[in-house]
Length: 109
Image (cartoon, rainbow, N blue to C red; front, side, top):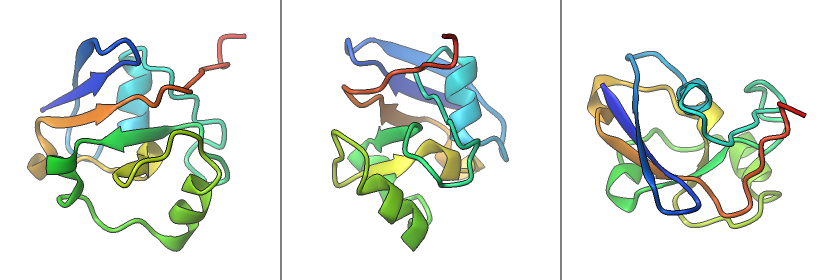
């Protein structure tokens, strides 16, 4: 299955994924600046993405803990989610997400 990431420079990067993969790891493997400091424990918002509106309704609702973490993120939109909380399914083949303008990946530093 495919996932499309739209970078801060509006470049489209297609990534291969499998059902059951978390969007965070797919994005990291594709070189996206999704830090994921807390490794998916919902203790940060460094894996924040903006889901394309046409895909947002296909996702399960965000848990209250995820909403709380998104309150701390910059450049939040109505369709913002934490990529660590998006588990890919066949129904999400073709998913498109945007990297927020403030994303920085400090993992390599």
